[in-house]
Length: 162
Image 1: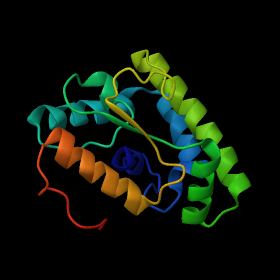
Image 2: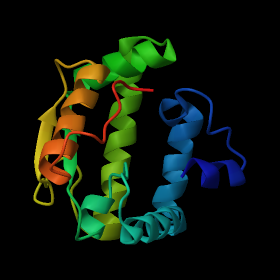
Image 3: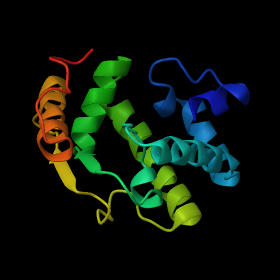
């Protein structure tokens, strides 16, 4: 999606871009023109069909039937705190941008695909609440799930986040 935004003239690779006024403007463009989301999802479906991949996507759990699907849950407040730290902005600024971004994104997916992001968890095999976990702890839990549930052995995940 970032590559498509860059092709439209946006500076989409700077940290915190999605929550910036420019990022929010691109979300409005996406709401008016579904070709961006359709192009990204078509490419992700190609990757998913090849198998043996991990895909980070808000749409694939509903669009691709196979695979093991994990929803990483965090409260709006916790996500705003993480964004604020990452982007060096106030929690209030992060919270305002996050709410705008997610409301509009939910509308896009509801209109385009008919599912309600963050409300319909029917495609998921696992929902992990990350509010009180560090990134390293989330990684270790996901490695354990991959090794013990999906792959059924203990030799696939590396020792730490890279």
